[in-house]
Length: 370
Ligand SMILES: NC(=O)c1ccc[n+]([C@@H]2O[C@H](COP(=O)([O-])OP(=O)(O)OC[C@H]3O[C@@H](n4cnc5c(N)ncnc54)[C@H](O)[C@@H]3O)[C@@H](O)[C@H]2O)c1
Image (cartoon, rainbow, N blue to C red; front, side):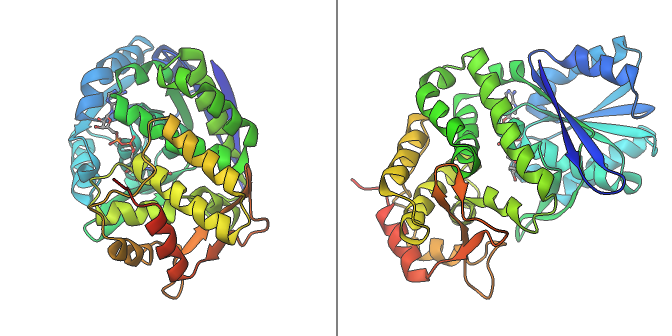
């Protein structure tokens, strides 16, 4: 097992311990028995992950003498709502939870965001632990403390920054992940290499086959290296007032694709296509070489990810949707663009405004053909 600490400055400084390894449930229970963070624990998970793993986790916690209960909600992005949050809180009340409890968020990014937000507001904030079970949640959603729910008008509109006490990424849970959801995670992993870690990018190019075949040591290494990239970035800018915005490479177009597809396109697929489009913009606006843009696209394809905008998506609607991105200012979309492999534009003003005509040209050039 690999273990490291993510320290946030401030007073008092806070630390999140991150653990990456296989079969970690007994370890979590032992850690909590040795250094309890609450009197009672609530394992929150969606219906699928709950059926697969909640009983094992509860058993491990019980064996360590810890009092724990389980709360389950319907799976899928559609559940990340105020209504589900309210239901979880009603269950907490019914189970007699007070302020001396902690939440264990066992699942993908939806569970982490939702259960994390419950923890952020329950009795004005109780500790929580992230137990991510998708690749995307391991390398991205569980790191950095962003929690949120969706409103009808948009994603993640209500939330809080609430750092988890610890993160346990149990690689063994990925064994039950369906292929498309597993592949999705590589969009963010490739992104990490492009924005801040050129050696990671080259390692991904060399190991795509083994990673897709889920070779254990390779998967653990990919998670550890990606978590380190994200941890390095968020540690310096917890509230995204500057540098953290480099994490948005590919995301202006990705969020627009999610909006126009009514969230039917998965986040990983949207980010992969978004990076392909924004790599084109980076060639025109940030001095990225054509050859590097081509390598980025080829690597995403090597992971089985899409890089072209589906033919049924209206480019005009897509361009309009880029203006709804949270980075947009005065009606103009902003982009976080790489200047070279592993390097984004320097300084704190990370994002660039791109003329709408250039955006449309890049969208056209990235359109599915045939
Ligand atoms: N907080 C952040 O910084 C951040 C960053 C990126 C994404 N997100 C959020 O993450 C969410 C997407 O995360 P996701 O892709 O993990 O979605 P998800 O949580 O919905 O998981 C995807 C599907 O996989 C299933 N699943 C999860 N783990 C499994 C396992 N081990 N075996 C079998 N099935 C399993 C789930 O039941 C679900 O059906 C979005 O809501 C997004 O906004 C948050």
